[in-house]
Image 1 (cartoon, rainbow, N blue to C red):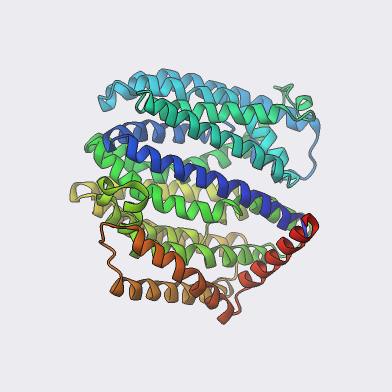
Image 2: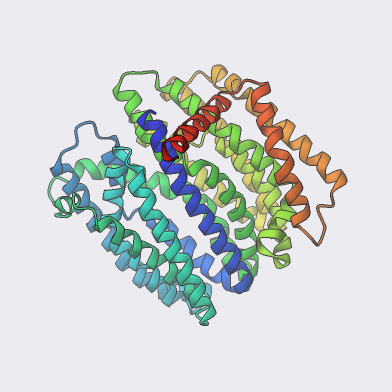
Length: 484
């Protein structure tokens, strides 16, 4: 088995298990806290998420991409990260009272103070995780992530039951970082790199500023509604939109996260080997979209029973938002790995400019759309998706040499597979009531019927993902034989 496939397996195991734990936590919290309580934390979380993109200043991505990596470069990356992350941690502490006053929500002060703690651990976590990713050591990453996610779940639920309300969510996130750090600290080889150097930081900072700005703009796209609605609307509206966006984001992220950590090392290694990087990019997109597109299309149709099953009837208003936002994520998933390709080819400035444009676009769209309701805000995201897929396709063709015709012809089987899965779901809806008060029934029928339809569609179009699935099954059988 190649090291890339092995890395994908361990990365997928870790990311998917974390997602399952996260889903369990979300389902429990959605039933234990009110939408208003969750909306309060969502506002704080949105602001913290924006600031968190600068806490490592792209040092991790720099270490993964760098051709010649020395101990001195690692220590300088750590030094830069300490300066930035600890500085932002102090800013978060000071920002809490300001946010509490601006939104007229006093509890934000303490929530910010709790969440600030993770910034002081970030340098040691991010640098070691990057070193593990560079060497495809995702088995170690898997262990740390699993322990952290489990600790987060247990602590959060326990504190909610003890009456800590939205503070439970903040404390749970902080304990997750502490648990991950404890797991990493057990590895004997990393303490050598935990002696920071604070000289000659310009090279890393020049790379990192573009990477961090890019991640800031990209992730802020999903939190802009929380910030705007939190000011112009109510915390309940924040929670409803956040639930719809969060759920489709959960689906897309679950399907992509197992592969995503491996993409930058894979593309960087492809370039170092002087191989065709656009071909590698196209193959990665074809494989992931064959999985993501059909799932999101099905979710768009079956949003009501799925929302009811996972989060309860109090979240019904999030279902129509989920349907529209799923379309946006289908569009966005098409170039999900574009930033990895731009980083691997040294186009960080272009990447940052692209994300800045999209950030400004969604800010304008949300502000203009909100007076017309949450559904109009969701429609604005679809407009953003059309802008993004058009812009990114043009940029990759100009800067990296992506052959647009070849790229989209390769995606045609994915489109046909998605159409088949969509029609199958619509057919099911004619015989099974999607508005039933027993949401498990339509979800169960979909869960039973759609996987075989999807697999048969892959086989029908001789999709390369089918070959990968069969290869993985063969690997699994070999592992079972060795264990027996």
